[in-house]
Image (cartoon, rainbow over all chains, first blue to last red; front, side, top):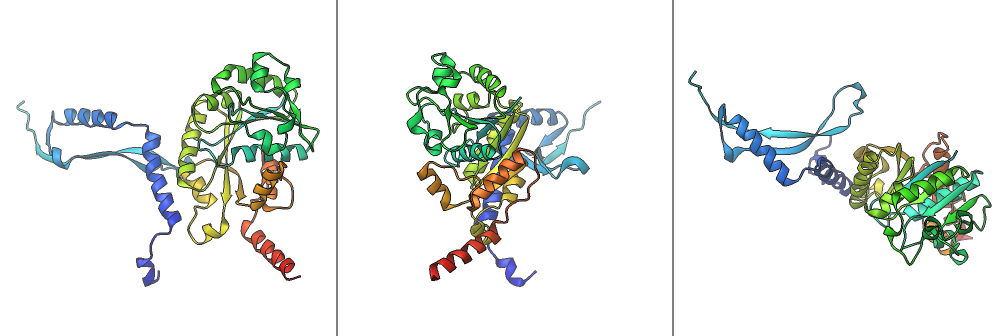
Amino acid sequence: MKLTDIFKKKTSSEMAKDRLKLVLVSDRSSCSPEIMDRIKNDILEVLSKYVEVDQAGLDIKLTQMDTEGADSDNKSVPALYANIPIKNMKHTSN
Amino acid sequence: MGEVIVVTSGKGGVGKTTTTANIGTGLAKLNKKVVLIDTDIGLRNLDVVMGLENRIVYNLVDVVEGSCKVKQAMIRDKRFDNLFLLPAAQTKDKTSVTPDQMKKLAEELKAEFDYVIMDCPAGIEQGFKNAIAGAERAIVVTTPEVSAVRDADRIIGLLEANEIGKTQLIVNRLRPDMVKRGDMMSAEDVIDILAVDLVGVVPDDESIVVATNNGEPLAGDSSLAGQAYMNICRRILGESVPLLSLDDKKGLFKALAGVFRKS
């Protein structure tokens, strides 16, 4: 790799491809913000039984990941990405 | 028993009608008996692209309403005896026809023709549902632009949901020079994003405009687009034809043009 490559701007076709990939993830997941919100609340509800969750640092979103395995043809599938910071483990009394 | 193919895209203006006209002409040149159905009721255009606008008596709505027989409404092509057009109605709207009626019509025509090709309107509403109702195979047309590719993705999803057996993609209006300098997505890029089989790439070619002006689809002539369409037709028939090398041909054409200019 040449030193100049580092500073090279992305071509517009690369930009188009990247933007399309992103927009298609949300298109394909056909998941409204409302449903996302409900998923988020449900996950939190379950987790908060056991741990104290840092609500501010919460990050739940739909994204894309490559499938593994020989017959997958390197296709991407929608995936739920969740990063949930835990403040404290709850110590149950029993 | 013939096959029913729908040509669709989602987005308007990517070349569905031109593609339908050229695939029809190409398949007819390959000695197949073909009928093209313009399902874009209210905005008919396939007739002018085919150069048959002066011969229309009856239309698709007349046929499904039983005002005339299918045979009376079908117009024979100017150049090919085995190519027919069933034009859309211009004064009605998309709700004049139902998917069930289209399915029945497709079944009927399949018995007599090798290929029944539906030219689908833009959009995903009633007109789209009518056009895909009887289809066994879909050809999705897109251009290498974000808006067209996004709509194509949506259409491919809807075709899957409606259990259309086979979906193939045409990347239309590709400009090899722009792809080369990184300012246009390549056919490979588009295929990579849409994860669907490619049935052909058609270069952006001025001869398409000329052919439409004249009302004579160019499939099978010596132009680059004409060759590309003929290759697509061969692939539809199941032949394995390598992709046109758009770059080299363009170079050759430029060189030839240069020679003529000098003389």
